[in-house]
Image (cartoon, rainbow, N blue to C red):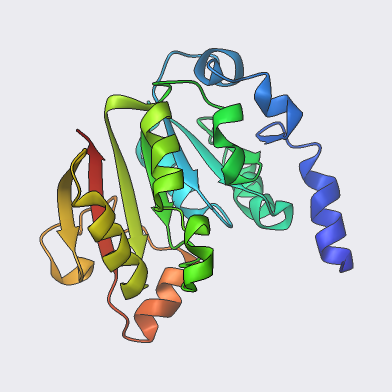
Length: 216
């Protein structure tokens, strides 16, 4: 591991907006009251990477608590450091494997879930790793409030089509569906937040797919 990664791992242990492993389990069902010290809604970004989406959503909606999830501490470091430097108090980062989501969040605890540019896991053998596979969707259904939505932004046409098929089945309500977000009517201030990787995709003339759905 490079010196820069080691330094970042060391730094995040002292960040009060980064929660790791067992510490996060103690907050299950009480994220708003025990970590954020309020009663505001909680929104998750899964596979948040450097946290650009999490931080910018928190800037736009100070009355909502945002938590970015990722396992790689050297990525989380960037978003967490930005939030601390800019004194954005309604954002936190949780360093866990997303497969363990139910160990950290209670039933009906989450208002919305964002899945932004996840690894599409294109191999058939890795379908269960896709963040919109039935395995993960069943977890989201448990932790989401009744009116809560899942948002997917992806440059991967295969993941978009795969997810569209999943949420076209009974038990889902598809609210928004576009294969070209920035040439659609839906590209508002929230959906126009762009991560580092999204900017690269757009520079390569890739269209951005977007789906919003909830559970019936």
